[in-house]
Length: 326
Ligand code: G
Ligand code: MN
Image (cartoon, rainbow, N blue to C red):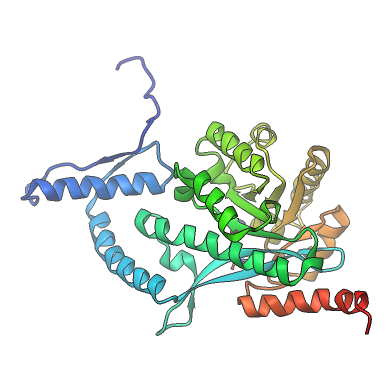
């Protein structure tokens, strides 16, 4: 209407326009559904117009979806674990669970190559599996190595998973089934996802904390979460985005930003971790700034569960043998 700013969409909308090449009404509806799935995968509450490139993508995605479903059934998906370490002594304080596809004909495939973010169906199948598998593994490690202390298993929650109305129930069920200490589970939501609907994010994060599950904002610095919003989120950990750490640590302004985040973390009693540490110099600089936690190729890439078990065993074995009479 004239004189009125367009109101933001309050639901996801997929739009398809009729053209002479479309012969059946069903095809038009399918196109609209493809556009709707894209709108939902981009975080919802938006309208997307169908275009033909979406059709080509939809077809190849259907094939991929088929292959991936087979992969799930044939247990070709793996959860890899990247250590999160104390920068003081490089000890592992937890892991981030990262899904990989052990394709029989290829080497390991990363999710950005197989989890096309537009594919609601696929992600809906994979995400709960990763969450369950990571919690089972964390529960096993906690039982096998009780001296691990405040060990955490971090799991990434995708935009779609976060938007699911069943997420809280799913988490409750997984906590019951795996008997994981809720505090040992850390749910990571990226800065960008958090800002899709800040009010809902604040509510959900609070609900997670009521379950005693630990919470983190991932990739902080790219999604536009203001400090005011950040303050309104119930989080235990803030993960500084990789570019801020890798490319700009030498830059005075970026050091100031990191220093400020560390200071806020101390004042707000939120842990701060640096992501993407690849060089010793970066690690040293972060330590000097007072950053306690870090993650990145310098310490370890994501590793297979067996390798992660070795790492934990090596870490707790000295104390285990010291506490046992020989
Ligand atoms: O945003 P998030 O932290 O969830 O991203 C994790 C991804 O980052 C994983 O796929 C992992 O392989 C990758 N990754 C982990 N450590 C590093 C690093 O030091 N450098 C780079 N470039 N990527 C990393
Ligand atoms: Mn993450």
